[in-house]
Length: 404
Image (tube, rainbow, N blue to C red; front, side):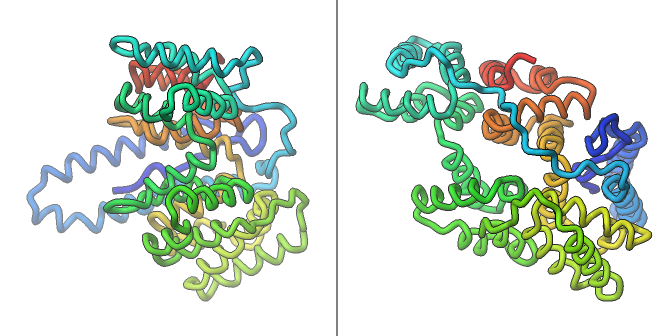
């Protein structure tokens, strides 16, 4: 079945380079695909087999149209925004409490935990309204006061998704990234989407801190764990990102951009099998600002654009990884807004994704992500959280999003 999550539709925006709500044709395609799936499942097995090829071709064509539309906007000189200038304003939704007192917060949390039935409202009020640095002070003060870790006390008192959000808030950013990476790797199967998201959107400094914490907490090297669990082009890409050596220079080298675009084009024109190695090298080494220029120049060389040229090369988790790098370079808040919307779209809600993004971006750019969400989907992130979550989980996620 086609993965409509790869669409990232780009309609001409008010401000160049920002994503907007997908067109009605996009939703029509989604509905048509669902109808086909339902009807197909009711056919006899013999008929299903005979029609599989036709349906796969339909899905492939639709996927390519959506995929190509995204790159078409990138290749348009008038539409590409490039990496924004360094933001000076604070774009997080969680701020340090100016009247912070760790001992007072510890007293409130102890009382909330010991209250019959647990006072979840107080836990939300304390932990969601303090900065991560302040939460670390609360943890230390609680340990000193009770002789027990705060996380252990909260594990016993809380349950389900609410517990997951609270425990995430108690970790430092590197600890939380390491926790999510380990959870994505361990057990049966690997959640490559989480590996792609974290390694594809973090800075060199953040990845270095993640690796150091991963070694401290789990006694293992992150790169080695990735090599054990992931193979092929995806392994090559993730290991390259894990080195944390990608350029972060915001100045664009025009000559290098033209050279890289030409290298991509020539590698794919007659020797399509070599495109992956060239693409991996460029995407994992060039800065986000540089990447934007490369995509522009590639569009001038190829009549079909990068998407069409790579049609036979990209698939599955490897495609998701490369698209994460491209989308992140294009507009990182929009990338996260899309991930949040997809986590709540359709039957069921992926609270792990909601929690990971909202918690990890709450002191970085969640305010910008919320703005992009409204622009892209015509409604606020908070509205969808209200619809798709409930109880204390809903309350703490909304508290982290702030009042908009």
